[in-house]
Image (cartoon, rainbow, N blue to C red; front, side):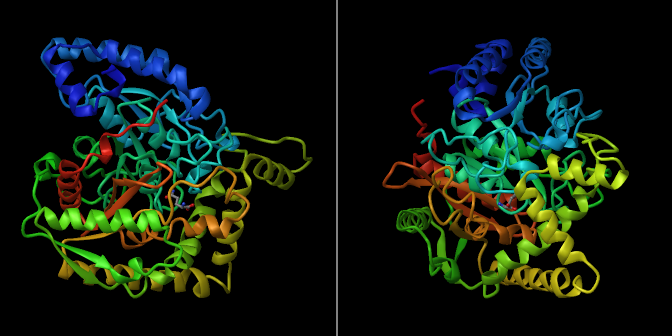
Length: 486
Ligand code: GLN
């Protein structure tokens, strides 16, 4: 077994025993990145020197007997979390040369554990997209089939984990951006409850929906990453003052006494690929075989989820992205002869087409006279959706569904058809609108050999039940151990 193939918990065991050094492990991962990144496009920035220095520091720390689960582990961070002294582009021309003066809270936490940050991963520009094709620096390719998308917007993080170009990664999820790429790349991903992980230093897309979480090779690794990043942070006013548990304690092998809900609206969803439907049905039987009882639940308002999300997210985005004006930081086009022309030229040239589309939609929805009809109405629908989930979760402990309606689609297939692209989020948007946690775990392969993910959603702050179901499922199956041939 090659060192870069190790899971986080395996690598931790070897580092702790002194079988390997972080320098060796980090070197192996950096070489792997060197061999594959040209093809896969998972990273925008690779910090070789910084990573090797961090690895040496970790080795010194380990030698002194001070080793926690992330010490010396090479990790990747999506390129919208601020890293002090290391470029953070959000895959946008407008932030092409932006070097943050501080670390995001999650990055501080990784560094405090002695983790090694190898680089910043590719993504859809400002996290807007489901395919990673909306990156100003070129697409990421799916390691399972390089003619296909890896999912988005955390496509670079998911592809890097799947291709062993890091041991684990951080992504962010506003409407599915951790779960959907994890599903398409055959790895595990967890979007925590809104407020569970600090957003301090996360470049904002839609502030009431954004949440950071792990993408990893298995469920135990997700739990270890959660242990490192969860918890209250006074610098993020939406971060909830509540202690984070030890997530690894939730990892049990059976599901006795647990009830899982199967939403009838999702099973009847038109456009669901037959291979996805088959994989989900078989996953539900496996979960029943582990002792859980499956019940049918109803989420009557989820049919409005795409409409509500694509008002709320663009509205918040249009407001958040107003700061990129060519004055404070980032790219500036100076060709015009007055201030207004400078703003217009900077934003027209600095933002890609999808980001401009969202800003235009959002500005319209928030404009005087329309605010109540659009943002106001969408917020009411959001409340109904949250209530649907809260009601369903009184009769079951977790809800199971597909993550994406189809396996990964070919690059170019949907890029000119935004509405079809938006429909790829149909199963993931609800968890963000409801604020509940959601997870993707590998549960099968399509006829063409593409990974399929099972989504597990649960009550607010009950990531533990998600991890428990996902871990038990992994103990009974081996989908998560398959890797693409590269
Ligand atoms: N695909 C969704 C969008 O385009 C969600 C993106 C995300 O979660 N960041 O908005």
